[in-house]
Image 1 (cartoon, helix red, strand yellow):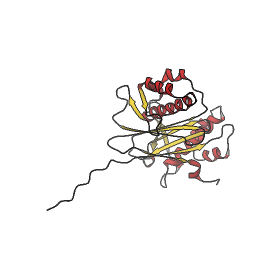
Image 2: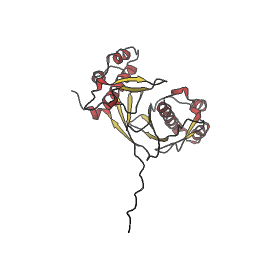
Image 3: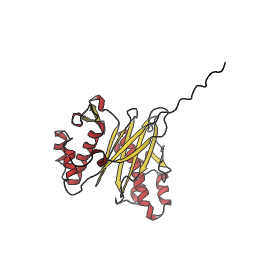
Image 4: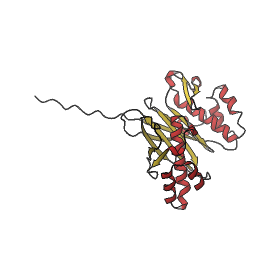
Length: 254
């Protein structure tokens, strides 16, 4: 008697959606005013403490994006309450229905908010303007030696681009693990930096946390470089990362 073959277990898939929104750098625009309606009073008070308009706008838009993206038909954006981890990483504390891995990043003119599937353990995103000033000295000070060597091999007109790609990858990783710059950037190195999916190599014990990591680089909008980090426990296929304009989600003016 023949028995049907037992299908092999397929690795789980995981999905990270990274939404991006343009922000005004010199005024409190209509988009920022719309976003303010989703914020809690303490977030508005905190926003008003920023002296630079661009920084205030980034805070307002980032928190509004997180509230909107983590909410659903049973959880209005205004009911979500945030807390912080040991090193200040934002996280949802209530209600339970809104608890998902997420991370916010910003630079002058652009804000990112990444939200992952609930079974994803860690998420980090980072973004930089391609006009940010860089230097070989900064790379030698902060990067791991293999990354410094990689930069030295690049044509001079591409070194700034690849510096920022490495920088956003490193920032995305340390934001994912929630330690910020408490983790030296030279304790881990990225390989295959010129590919869409670079690979991390840990040079210090314990940093990998026995998780499977995926990294994806992108240019979400002209003039910007961004990276995303996703970590899961157990077997999984490489994370799928979609980059989407937040303005498309919320539509036009109400």
